[in-house]
Length: 394
Image (cartoon, rainbow, N blue to C red):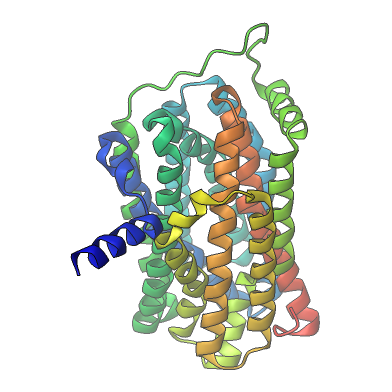
């Protein structure tokens, strides 16, 4: 019996998520702050499309939120990455966080005063700009906080807690709207986001200075457009990274269903808290995938696994579009989320393995464009198709 328990314990450790990075105080503080901030961010991620649909009654307007969110990412994601490689990453993160906080307060004021769809698009643009500036620095500091052998585990922890927040946040948003209704629930969601974000700001303030890494021998440190172009040249010369980014971008543009959730929840399932389940379902699958992610680190052919994960994502989303039972839609979206977690961990592991520290901010900037921009383009695609063909086809 003891032998069986020992074997079972070893098997569980091989599959369970690695918690060793949490023993590092600086990482633990940032991880906790990120967890709180991501929970609040998910409240806003649900509230903004709900507000837009309430203002317009049109999924095309909801899809336009994708354009408002993507354009700043396209410009400021690479720029923020170049700045993160040329300046103290702690200061870059604090500056971006200040702008992000201001945009949260703007969304709160917009909801309280009664808004206009164009004004909401403008606020989303500011919010996305702040995210694009701060995100590369936030991702690039991971390798400064942890020893090399703990970086993959830290990356997996970040993804898993993000998806856990993505489960709890939309469910909480659904409960807020069910309890208060749209008009009163929107400012509650935005206010909670602003309050929870203070945890990440406090953790960032306590970080040590993080000056840029020295350039390679014979290479000058360049900022601005020249630095951005250096990052793209490095990416183009590293096919494994280029392919991983391209595959993820295609999957998100062609199969991201978020813009359809308010309409699907209202027309198929009667609205209310249903919208929270739809937004949470993908994250539920991703969280379960993260909690059992120990096997991912033992994969030998990561490229093949990445392609299979992306194909699994697309098939599950397509089947969810055809389903009419809420439980089945949630289940299929959860399967898609688990596949997406696998692809995300593999892509980030490849980036951390191939990118030197002096390039990590710029490549994280490109990653920001792909990871956050791809779904926004997918939102536009889904909203436009729903307007012409209906939500099921989209």
